[in-house]
Image (tube, rainbow, N blue to C red; front, side):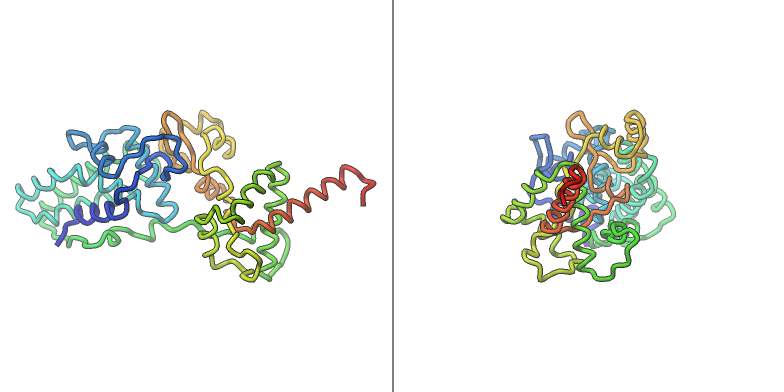
Length: 338
């Protein structure tokens, strides 16, 4: 029977395969850095020669990726961090098992449970670059304690068993009620239409409808299948008989996936210096990722923190809302027009 270390490694390698791993943005398509290693090379670079994780920028980015994916309900990067930390404990686990006459699988289970608990406990108030070293020390201490009192915890067989889903709930769905102020509309189709028109009016107000129109052209031409497939599966779509039902998309799909720290600080209403101070202390609301020498903040978690609904809209509704707002604006400028 495989021990916990082996199960996690198999899970990560099966998930990552031989694909390029982006530790900066999580997706090579959105990253400004050209070099992206395979997971095996990333693992070798993270562990260092002496087997101890150092507080480097690489570890800082890896932990930030883990925190961001936890918010989305995706355990991939959490498991990557845990595998890298556990890989640095191979020698320690063998030593404890040999010196204290404890089954190796029990030692490694204790280590993994302690590392996973530490990951959860350090989600707030601990700088990302310090988390791996804390996980490592806690795992070693827990293994010694478990061996001393002769506890025998059964080793897990599936990586899914390591994960406590209740500790990492998925983001809540779109809040349509927040977009319809003072109305008591019960027809889902009407709510859906109003949602798109309101966002179209907002796009027009911010003078970005040209970019939105180009985005809609790509969707209608089928050049954005990854975006439309994600939205079209949502159960809250009310108008399946609408022409082009596969053209739905999330508002965040149109926005850039990352913004700089100055823009994020402005959106949060805090000074830029305070934002960098919060990052160093590990208290910034959305863990930023590092691209080269600069920090970037992911937009979707930032929207979630600011309670901005990432709603699903249809291009027709958005364009109708923008056209209505445009016509209203012209009438206000020229009172003679009816």
